[in-house]
Image (tube, rainbow over all chains, first blue to last red):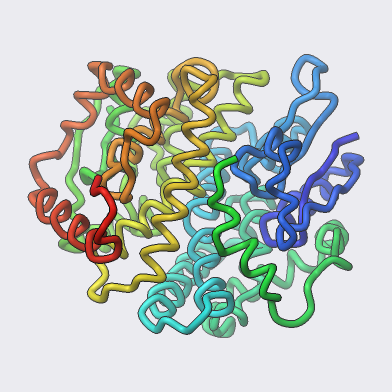
Amino acid sequence: MIDLYSWPTPNGHKVHILLEETGLPYRVHAINIGEGDQFTPEFLKVSPNNKIPAIMDPDGPGGAPISVFESGAILIYLAEKTGRFLPVEARARIQTLEWLMFQMGGIGPMLGQTHHFLRYAPEPIPYAIDRYVSETKRLYGVLDRRLEGREFVAGDYSIADMAIFPWTRGHEGQNQKIDDFPNVKRWLAAIEARPAVQRGLAVLKDQRRTGPISASEREVMFGKTQYERR
Amino acid sequence: MIDLYSWPTPNGNKISIMLEEIGFPYQVHAVDIGEGDQFAPAFLKISPNGKIPAIVDSDGPGGAPVSVFESGAILMYLAEKSGRFLPASGAERIAVLEWLMFQVGGIGPMFGQANHFLVRAPERLPYAIERYVNEAARLWRVMDTRLSDHEYLAGAYSIADMAHFSWMRLHRGQGQKIADYPHVKRWLDAIYARPAVVRGLDVLRDLRTDYAAEDEKRDSVLKALHPTARQP
C-alpha cells in the first residue's frame, strides 16, 4: 500500500488523480502546510525540500521500499510502475515529457507566483501582479494553441494532462478569462468529468481552508519559519 | 546530427554540456532572446512556449527527424538515446528524476525570479527581492545538505547534476555567498574540472556582453537593501 503525504493543493491533486486513475491502493497522511507539518524531521527524510506531495512505496524497485518527492518524479514513477499514462512509443513519450516539463517549469511556478501576489503578499505590488498575471495569460495561450485540434496535450490522456489540469482549474483566481481560451475550457471540462479525477480532487477536501489565510498560516508558508536551518 | 537552438543562459548551458558529455555531433543555432528571435514562427514550431533550448534530432525515432523543447525533456531524451547519465531502472533512476524535477520546478524558476528582481526589474521592489533571495538561500541549503553525504545529487554524476550546475555556478547572481555552502562548492569544483563541461559552457558565450553590467547592478541592489552585510 502506497503511503501518500499530501495536502489539497494543485501539486497534491496531480498525484491524487494519478493514484485514482491507476487504481493503486493508497493511504493518505495529511501534511498541513499551514501548520508547519512539512518541516518535521520525519517528513524531511522523505521530502528534503519540505514540499508536498511525497510518497512511500513499500513495493519499490527490486521489491524494496522507496520514497519519492517532487510531483513530476512521482508521476513518472507511478506511470512507469503501472505502464500507464506515459507512452513507451518514442514520439508520444517525448511529447508527454515535453508538456510535463512545461507544467513543472512554467505553469506551476508562474501560476504559483500569480496566486502569491494576488492573494498572499501582505500588500498589492502592481509590478509583480502585472508580471505574473501577464505570464500566466501567455502560458494559457500556449496551452490553448496546443489544444487546437487535440483532445489532450500529448496524444492520449497522460500524466502531462494530470499535471497541468489542477493548476488551470483555478483560472478565475489567476485573473484569467477562460472564454479567451476555448480549447483549454473544453479540455478542462473533459478532464473534470472523469470519475477518477473527481475522486482525486476529493482527497483531503475537508481540510481545505475556507476564507482568508490566517496570520500564523501566512507566517508558516511565507515568513521566516521556512528559512530556518534544519 | 543534432541542431541545437540556444543562447548562453543556464538552461541553454545544460544541453550544450550534455551534448559534449555524450559526444553527439551537433550544430549550434543562436536564438538571441534579447532580440526576439524566440518568437519567429519557425522557432515556435519546435518550441511552442517560445523558449530556448530546443533541439532537432535528424536521426530521431524510426530514423526520422524529431524536435524536443523543455530542457528537462531534452536531457531525458538525450540520456535515454545515449544510454548515459540516467539509469534505466531502479532506485537510482528515481533519485535522478527527483533531483531533475527539483531543478526544473524549483531552482530554475526561483533563481530566475531572484535574478529578475535583482537585475532586470525597472523598479526596486524590496518585498519581491527578499522573497526570492530568501527562497534561493533555502534551496541552496537543501542542495548543501544533500551534497554533504552524496558525492553527486543522485548516485553517479547524472543529468540531475548537469541541470543544476549551470545555475548553481552563478551564486553571486542569486545573492548567495558560496563560502556558506562548502558541499556545493566541492561539487561545483568537481564538475568544473570536467573537460566536457568547460566546452559546453563555451558554446555561444561570446554572444552575450551584459555579464559585467548585470554583476554591478545586482551588487548595488543588494548593498542598498543590506548596507551593513558582507557582499558576495
